[in-house]
Image (cartoon, rainbow, N blue to C red; front, side, top):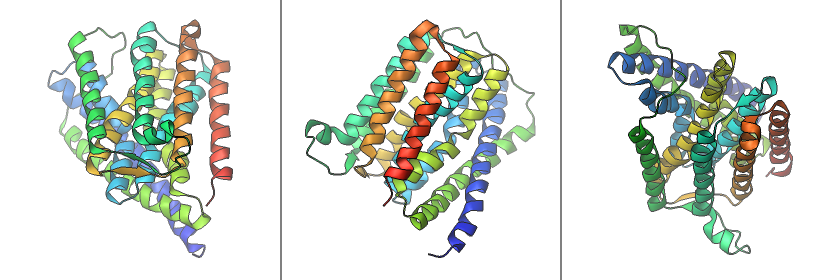
Length: 325
């Protein structure tokens, strides 16, 4: 390939990320206004509309990659986005100001995230874990995808049934006809942006000899985490610490259970390369470390934030320098 590949696809990557970011912003704001006008509670809006909106890019990219037969990008996007959420976004946010946590977030949501992450790793690389000499590709079956989706529905049902009060309200604007238009346009921007990002990032990866897994777990993952970044920064500005952490943990759970669960149902089996195993272990370690930080003094301190960011920078360097085809 000649350098025209870079000249043509680099602007497309930037455009696709902008589409994903702005599309998600429109979806979240318009859907929240519509739900509020229909009398849906703020709790339901936060658990469904906002979580879906901020995870929409991961959903669009993952499903687009599955349909296009790029399983490595589909899974690596979710794994990389989850690491990015907990490292760069949570850690980066904590670098500016310590983020307060709570026992409920740690023991209920945090522990569930640890369990789900370990379960996904076992689904993908169970045979390799039981037999270290087995270096074959990882795979997840349709049944395992259904199990993930069932866990997701069960988790949301548990939250709905408890009907717990929340201390932070989501602000809503007045409903107008523009909300319906923005919802449709936003969804279209997310779907097209996801498709564009997969194609352009894959072209760049092939040009430089970088594997689809590496490009998916780094650049694509960072791009699709843009809505979580925007939401967390806004929560920080408004002093809503629990919203910042809740958004990231909720997004990670939706990515693992909802997005990858559906991907495994669509693509049977969902096969990924052996190099994905180390990234899955990285994610498990990152989740456990974040939970420990959240439990220590019931906050994520500025020092802990710097540690999380440093770990992610080292991981990115390792991915790019150590995994070139």
